[in-house]
Length: 235
Image 1: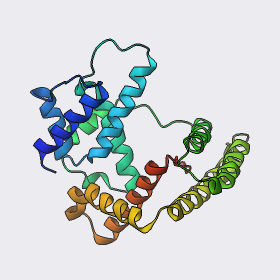
Image 2 (image 1 turned 90 degrees about the horizontal axis):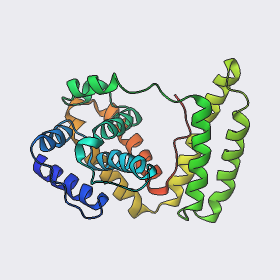
Image 3 (image 1 turned 90 degrees about the vertical axis):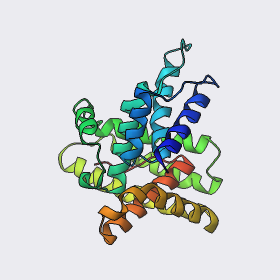
């Protein structure tokens, strides 16, 4: 996607999030969003960052004024960094972005604790089931994983903590494999195509094996997004 098109898509999405109120992406805002495009931020990842800002904004109560895209920068960079780590892209593969990333990462709080992660995963699993996207056949798996996570909260130190983290990785693999079986061939083809589009800016900088691993991780993330599933693993 060319930079002007990327900026127009962001502007349109921001307009929708602002209930139709048009906030133009021009001047310094255009330069900011252009950097995201040049650095390879996938459009849907940028949307996810914007969503995060609006979620916090709505929690504060009645809105007072439309949101400018500049306010969403930290959340967009957070979402991009998470996406990069989830796909296994090394920092050296990320095009440009050094000054903005370095200054951003210096202000990012440390990763959440394991107990907080477990609590968040249980909440997300409950929300996914309540959302009606998952079939009834998924209930048993969700219940079993949620129960294991509740039990795991009691032992998260030393050897017990390491055992919990290993078990989380196994549960995460089981969850994503079950989620894959819910999607038909057409849906999986769409996700593979979307993953290729997301990784296109980085393909020339990656070895084939690394790209294939990143592509597989990107597909897994898209499956989670489609079904509203959390990342159970913890690192």
